[in-house]
Length: 309
Ligand SMILES: Nc1ncnc2c1ncn2[C@@H]1O[C@H](COP(=O)(O)OP(=O)(O)OP(=O)(O)O)[C@@H](O)[C@H]1O
Ligand SMILES: [Mg+2]
Image 1: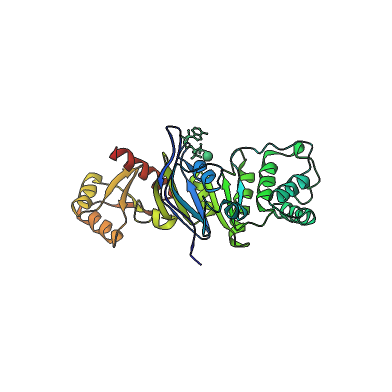
Image 2 (image 1 turned 30 degrees about the vertical axis):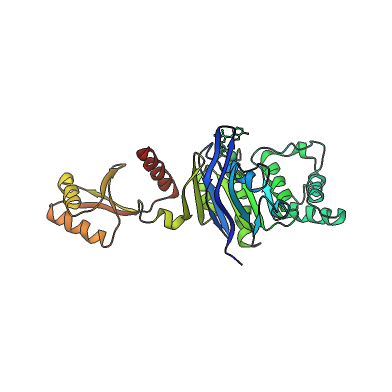
């Protein structure tokens, strides 16, 4: 089996003249992936196109070997979708009834849908509350019900579109942990769409970065972050300017940030810093490592993009 669960080729979706996504070509590897991008970047448009809710304007896409245009039913059977906006829950319906109903909609038989609904609600931590009415649920609980209903037909892929929106830190951590566990314990492929970098970093190893309907970058988060802004932070006591120039003259990338001198990490950077301190008669007061976060990558990518335009 291919290690890619989704591939798209020049996939575009325009709403009239408004660009939703434009010539998106991605390969989503098995396991977990974060769709990362600011508001309006095209994440939801791509997800809804993959699910056949929106018709692509151009291009092709394939989910687990099925073409989204000719085999959309097979695609839908294999995806559990947690939509971005609040599902219009019927307040008087119990969680059990709702999730079982979603199971029926996904083709499960009556008894199976009840059993699976119960299992799914237990899985998301709402086992005890399964016969409570949805109208009495908090936002965090409703998000969990949405997750349970995405799981009810035992899909291979779970797509969660901004599942932490509006949740407090505890609810957010619970949701991200559930999503991560689906991948690690249940062997599901998970796609987490978010504009929050920390959500993606906390949940998956691989990210696809969106901006204005296009893909800015895709790759392993460690690889995306490594070598980009990983740096050594230094504080010196005297001759700061000389020290800085000494390193620059030797070809190091050096900048000042937050009261520190940052030296981009390449081979043997520490030794070069000590040598520079020696040569410029300064004293090193602090030396620490600063590894870049996805946030840095994100900011860098956007800065570069703006620079190009
Ligand atoms: N139904 C629609 N009609 C017209 N334009 C739309 C529609 N849905 C989305 N768009 C436009 O398509 C672009 C991509 O929007 P999309 O909702 O896919 O982004 P997103 O990355 O999911 O953003 P968010 O983080 O806000 O959810 C935006 O410019 C948006 O205004
Ligand atoms: Mg969206």
